[in-house]
Amino acid sequence: MSDHDGEQRKPTVWEVVQSVLAGALGVQTNEARKRDFKSGSPMPYIIGGVIFTVVLIVVLVVVVNVVLSSAGV
Image 1 (cartoon, rainbow, N blue to C red):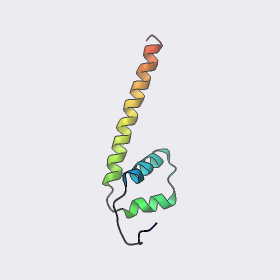
Image 2 (tube, one colour):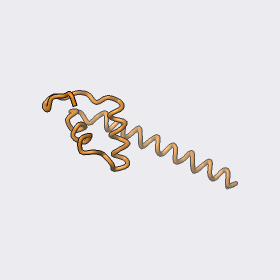
Image 3 (spheres, rainbow, N blue to C red):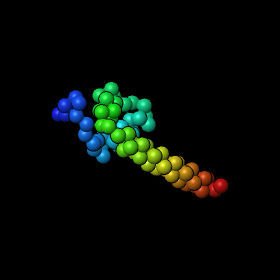
Image 4 (cartoon, rainbow, N blue to C red):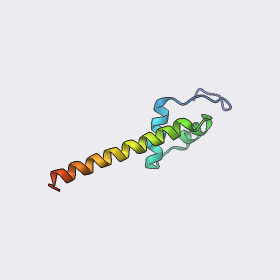
């Protein structure tokens, strides 16, 4: 990375999305984990995690309702 070791910077939206998805799947690389912890504030990752969780629940509810309605239940 082009950042110096002690320098903190805000993570990009893409970095947050990648970290949240990798964290949800449990496949985060050590380099990405270090980058995430150097960013300073955990708030983007918390917000990303909450959004991911809400979207996942909504998608699951929709899928279950579609399957149940197509089964005639």
